[in-house]
Image (cartoon, rainbow, N blue to C red; front, side, top):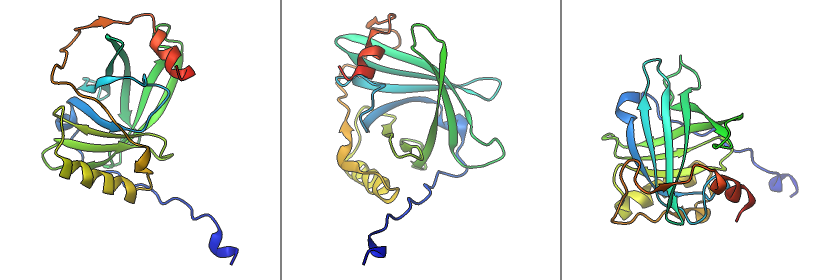
Length: 192
């Protein structure tokens, strides 16, 4: 009886194979995510923009709007294993963003991607982070439900997912008051 209660080791997540990095570049809107300390709790219109650099790395710009201000952090991504065809990346951000001293490196695994590169499921091996992304600010509920099922199969507790509010007004580029002081980052870490 006791042996049947032993913890089952988590299975290895399966990342997409054969991802075209060039096609993956551009803007992605966050439809849902697991709450994290690195994002404001009241964040809306959250999005990520990826741009391929000449050296093969990817410039990452993550943005959200909180309290009427644009919050952002920039980083760099690279293939975890350049010889592999798996969509496993290492992303590096410097924190705090207002005084970039400490590099924070995380995993970014594309777990699912449709053939048209319009929606994606992104996670990492610890299963502490999960994002449902879309090229548009809204996602068809049927597609969303399919991505939830995929996340469950990868071992995620999808009950913890938070839908990200995306309004009909979506600020462009640098619009909105940018918080250059990084106060949002400190508040996020403290859970305020």
